[in-house]
Amino acid sequence: MAPPQQPLRADARRNRRRILDAAVQLLAVEGVAGLTMDELASRAQVGKGTLYRNFTDKAGIASALLDDRVRDMHARMLQGPPPLGPGAPGPERLAAFAEAYMRHISGNLDLVLLTEESSPRGRFDRAGYPFWRRHVEILVAEVRADGARMRAEAIMSILSAAQLEQWLRIEHHELGELIPRVQEIVVSIAEA
Image (cartoon, rainbow, N blue to C red; front, side, top):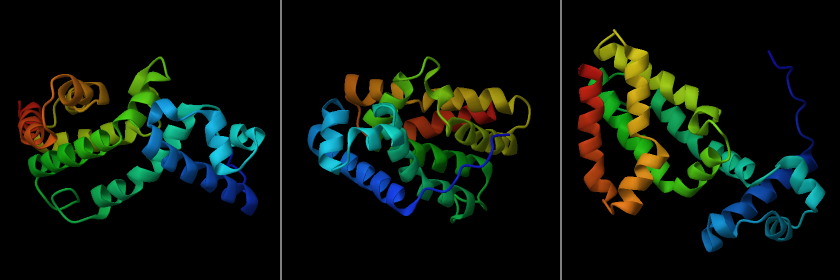
């Protein structure tokens, strides 16, 4: 177990927030390709040392931005109204999760791809991946208990950023067209 981290000083929290806010602005204008550490330090009005103390590379910035963006989804999954939140049958919750997750990934596709491409093991090295997979595993177990872990991994493969990039950017499918088709596949994997 890792020792607890010391809380950031107020000025360090402000600098971190300035860096993340500047990253959001820079991404909106320049995209991931235009997100350079030099430009980010300049826009955030912090020194490079401050920037690198907070984030070692672009993937670290992307990861922090994604962490900010998933908190609401986590809360809705764990405590929100059905079908995404508790209270609906497993197949309905799986379908709701598939839609919410696809919307999250597609809305942040370049950031997700950047974090996954920065690691040899891709999405498996992302801090949030075990949470997503475990959530799906629990929902699958409600539908059919045997093989829930492997079925959850199969579902997460279908929902991967690389797969969504293929469907959306290479094959030019519309997200609204994909969601019901993928939901059907996800539920069928759970029930098979």
